[in-house]
Image (cartoon, rainbow over all chains, first blue to last red; front, top):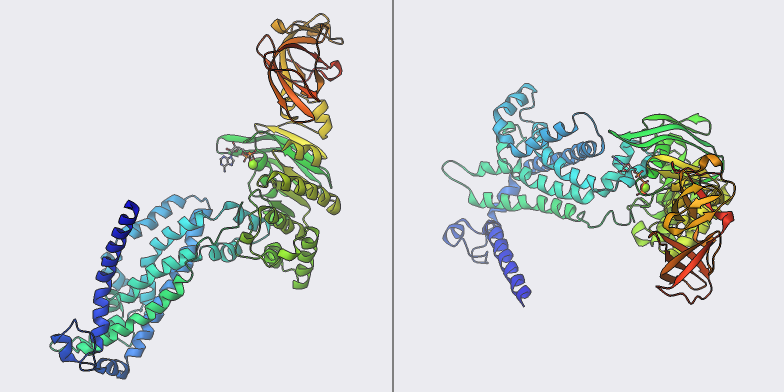
Length: 275
Length: 355
Ligand SMILES: Nc1ncnc2c1ncn2[C@@H]1O[C@H](COP(=O)(O)OP(=O)(O)OP(=O)(O)O)[C@@H](O)[C@H]1O
Ligand SMILES: [Mg+2]
């Protein structure tokens, strides 16, 4: 009986939180389909035939530069995920598997990256990027985001790699695999769920970030979608239809990526290996 | 197949010396079993041969080639782990052929060898299954199959049967014995199981605290253990030990009495010795005699055809005697036991066997 009650309580709290979290998103999506007047007069009312107006979407899709901004965002996000996972997993493997002199120190140094926000270094980063002639390139964004996400990725992946039975790696060594092949053919397939988790954690802040696009790639057709939306936010007039429509469409790619990654979140991938 | 020769092998983990001066030759095609108490260094020795553990000193030669500095892959060994260590994300066939794939073996050849191993180990219907869809015994066979397909010079087994239940253990043990004959393989095998050791081995190596206590044919170790440790370790139930002191013409066992024994040198008189005798060489017998000791029955274990009687001697030492058939003995009965003089073992003060 008590367990039943506490289950209800847990579900109530979670349900409330879900509502709270979804509310702004629902509001954005709902209002993106409404006429401007309806957005302001009755913001909480769902789109109905009488106030329906797809003007925001026609503007967004009519704008020739927005598809490019989407592509930029996708390129940056996917590029960052790829590099973070590759280097993160490699570094995690090296730090857990090999005993070398600076092992502990290096791990500690990397974990500092988790604690210190990268934005504190913005000025230095701008200088560095400018010196490398990477201002207004997607490369600059990918590099900065990769650096930002690596520490946590290494931290999480190390834990998972450490859980792969030692016998497996040694069996592979006896089987004659090189260290690279052990990494790519044994370790990577077995930490797929962990990599998916890291990918999700990496993806969302990168996709939503406004700070570094603004600093490092604010022009030259290299704007990301979050930055591109800003063109509808004027100093004197804001085209709310377009802003809401652009934000609503911006949800779709991340949602797709999330679906892809969440399919990798499989339990018990290593079961059957030992015992 | 090849001979494995180990000379003066030492291995330390930090300050702890785990293997001390190991000298061991595994003849070409022979089956050597390593036994010893937990933590004595069996796995470490096996892993050193495999190349998974760098050694601190000495040499390891496989097939006439010094392999100290070679990685496992180049030593032409195959190891079967206690935990099986199958690759969980591959099916049985891929597990077995995995090593060959990276050795750039032609695909047809890999398939042929996997099929051959699957036939020998009766794994044919399971080739497309994942490890998690197999029973313990099947996984063990896949692990052995993975070793076979690589046609190694030496097979290394680390307690391969310890995760199996009793019936499967016996089956697989017989399979391994057959496999050894079939492949004429050189095998080094670690086990905790006395029966496995006695039945499989051409040579048993008894280890203790990083040293080899004795190596030899199973029955030699059984009938002529070189020291107290081997005497107590080989055989189940363990050998009985009774402390005593050599006198003219016999051994004084203190409160337990005395035994008359010929063939003791006069020089030995006065030295402290340990008398050892296996339960099967102790009989329950009433009456007096040169090799009789009186005792009280503590416990009678009946296993069916045979049984064991635990007897407490006056000094407090407990001795076990094997009995055949039915017995009327009960706890608390006073009786006496007769020692078979041809199977008495005598160990000196240093624990070594005395002649
Ligand atoms: N990586 C290691 N670091 C430090 N000490 C180790 C390491 N591996 C093993 N040892 C120590 O070496 C000794 C021998 O270990 P080993 O695994 O060879 O024992 P074993 O004879 O195989 O025992 P068991 O029968 O329990 O498997 C043990 O005392 C163990 O604590
Ligand atoms: Mg062991």
